Image (tube, one colour):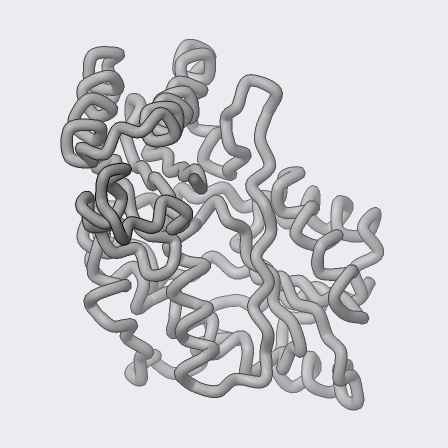
Length: 286
């Protein structure tokens, strides 16, 4: 595996490769990341991975400086996965000048949920992903469903800019107790780690209520938020949305008594909540 930091060296190394399968990451790699690389290998060759902690997507009070950086351990894991190139630029490599040109997603997708809670987050994500795509020129790029809204934002970006990159979604990898793998799990204390699976359990309860025919979406969401708050969490949002566009579903269209209802319309419940000082996100397709 070659470890490359300069854009020009990366382009020289990848010249002539037209089936690149690419996985962008911020490092601190875990089994969830490695599963993305295995998915990538099913869709292209060679597999290229990047590690870059992107300052543009962190707010002023977020954890950019403290975000875990474990490059040596990450390299060891990537070598075992037979990754062809690791692109690990520094800030001066990727942003040699201040990044004044930005890619801003539409407010109806990028300004809701995570976008509302973290202003500027998806602009930072879209900007760095567009730049990384220009550097790597992948045929396929793999993103995990755990960051569900991010996946949808990037998918729409690729469509609207007519990028020659197919966006492939990979399933969320979980611990045996249901906790979704995340680099931020490392911030949890032992007691918080024991409590953390409650988030997924609450999502499963929402799924159960919907599959049993309940259609008062607002009430379901309120109960879920209350369940987390009662256990000491600080819920940001728990929202039932349409998988197609993350817009709120029309309860009438899901009514079992509605003559034209389509109960098969795919939904997803997305959630973000703080446990102690750690903000966790998760989702469950329905």
